[in-house]
Length: 98
Image (cartoon, rainbow, N blue to C red):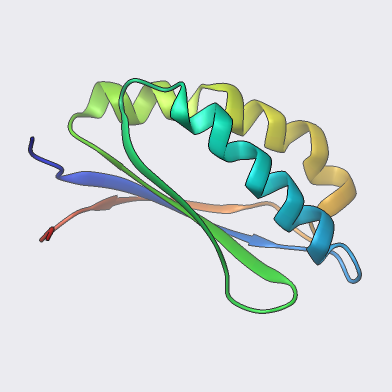
């Protein structure tokens, strides 16, 4: 398996909404588990208002399927209520994996 691409998404919660955003991300794990092209999926917390998602993929098809899948759709639904601004979503190249 060659993991050579990923997605880094940074999310800024509205004041007082960090816990709700964290709960949403915890629920996202089940959706990510259903995606065949997503090799790994991590949700993380940087601070009380800054959260993120990091995913990895073996190919561009998997990455594109994720970008148009259930998690981004769900985020679009809750985003106006939970997020202070639009997510910062960046495709990344994975250089090394252990």
